[in-house]
Length: 361
Image 1 (tube, rainbow, N blue to C red):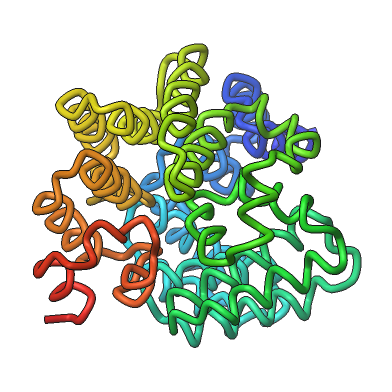
Image 2: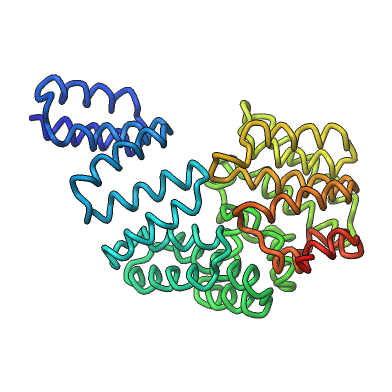
C-alpha cells in the first residue's frame, strides 16, 4: 500500500498536481515513516513546486547512498540549470552520460546545456547521440526540434548559413515546408533564421501557409510570437504599414493572457517599440528583467535578448550594444558569430561598439 501511495505522489508531482501529490506523500509517510522511498518522492514534490535547491539537496543525500545512479546525476543537472548554475549542470549531466550512455533524455539536455555554454562541438556530439538513440519511433515534434537545433548550432558555431539551410530543407523534403515552419512557432526566437534561409521560406511564412497546422500552439498563447515574427518580416520586406498592423495585433493577442509572464513582457516590449512608444517599451523590457534576472535562473538571459531587441527597434543603439555585451558575458544561446550574422542586428552593423563586440575586442 505504501508503494502505491509513493507511486501516486510521484505521478502527481510529474504533472504538477501539487495538492494531490502532497496528500499521497503524507499518507505514505503516515503508513511507513521510515520507508526508504519517501525521500525520492519528497524530491519530486519539491521539484514540482519549483523548489530546485531543496530537490537538489535531497538528490545529493541519495547520491551518497547510490553513487552510480545516473538518474540522480541527471536530475541534479536539470536542477542546476533551473538555478542558472550552468557549469555545475554540465558536470552532473556529463557524469550521468558516463554512467549511462543510453540515457536518451540526458543526451538532449546535455546538448542544450553545452550549447548555452558555447561548447558547440560537444553539444553536437550529444545531439548526434540523441539522434542515434531515437531514430526509431521519433515523434514529429522531436524531429522538428532536432532540425531547428542542428540549424541553430550551425549558425552559433560557424555562421554556417548554407549548413542551417540544409538541415531544414532536408526535413522539409520529408514532411513539407509548411510543417517545418510550424516548428518556428514553438522554438523560441527562430524566426531570424527564416530571414537567413531566404526564399521560399520567408514568402511561405508571410503568406501564413503553416497556420492551419498551428492551431493548438496558437491557442496556447503563441499568437503574439507569430504576429511579432510577421511584423519583423514585413518590416524587412519594406512594408512598414503592414508591420505596424502586426505589432499592434501582437499586443492584442497578449491582452487575454493576463497575468503576463516575464517572456510576455519581453514580447510586449518589442511590439510596443515597433509602434514607436519607446519609453513604454523600455519599461516593459526592464520589467521582464526584474521578474526574472539573469543570475540564479535558467533563462533570464532571454530577457537581455528582449531588452536588446527592444532598444534596437526603438533606435537606442548605444544601449542595445550594452545589453548585447551583457548577453555575451553570461551563458546563453548567442555567440559572437551568431550575432554577426543575425538579421535582427542589421541596424547595428556600422556601430563601432557592435563591431568591436562581434570581433571580440
